[in-house]
View 1 (tube, rainbow, N blue to C red):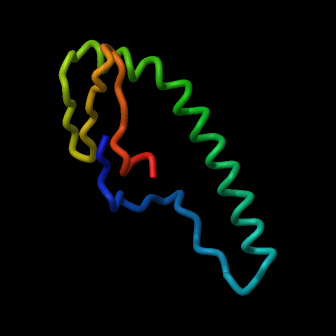
View 2 (view 1 turned 180 degrees about the vertical axis):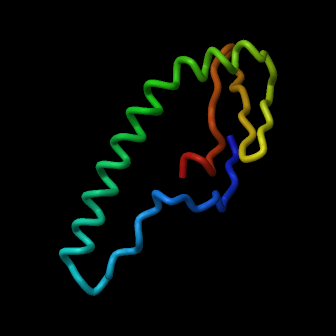
Length: 86
């Protein structure tokens, strides 16, 4: 899946930490790790329904405004482009 390299900023984007204050940098990293864990859980929860939706459409590629999702050669298996995983 290819995503927009510059997704729109949202209200939940945290302000940049003061890189001169080590405590602020550590706190920012901890907060980001919590957010990452939450996102990973959301992805795991949505993944079976996502695969079912892709299978229902039965297309080699599904184009959306911000992403193109491509099917792997293995039947009913979908993958993301390397840009998304990086």
